[in-house]
Length: 180
Image (cartoon, rainbow, N blue to C red; front, side):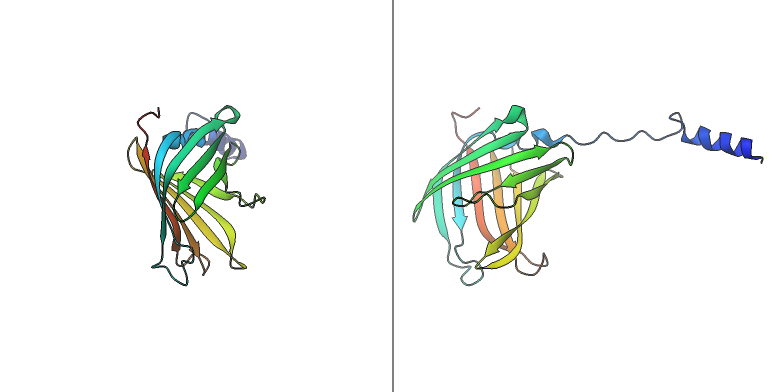
């Protein structure tokens, strides 16, 4: 086969008529829509999951999430009572370039680094780093929808770079009757 015929064959194979269509990129901007609105939250928290995982505290309260930034972000507030009152503000931002969510869980007056990830097979998994008793370790957060009106959230620490995970915060949420 001469060079011209070879070049023609390569061009024909590379043409759109012969190419497999590319799957569209997943636009995950609506991944957290299941969590929009007002929910009752039942929280289980382990203040020291490595030293005393059997000792947990519980909280009950209200979690509200609304969209911001034309739907490219969410703001979540939690007000819950237990051994003490919890008042929490969390921020979620969708990055269309990376097709991932950046989740911020401010503590006190510090924003901290985000947990980053997305949804696969209906479960959202987000990874980040946090300081626990002065030690930096991996943190994993997972959101699992349980139908249109409920979901489960779990946060775990890994002391060994992701080989094992120890939960320190879990919440089961049920949509309030007045919520859309």
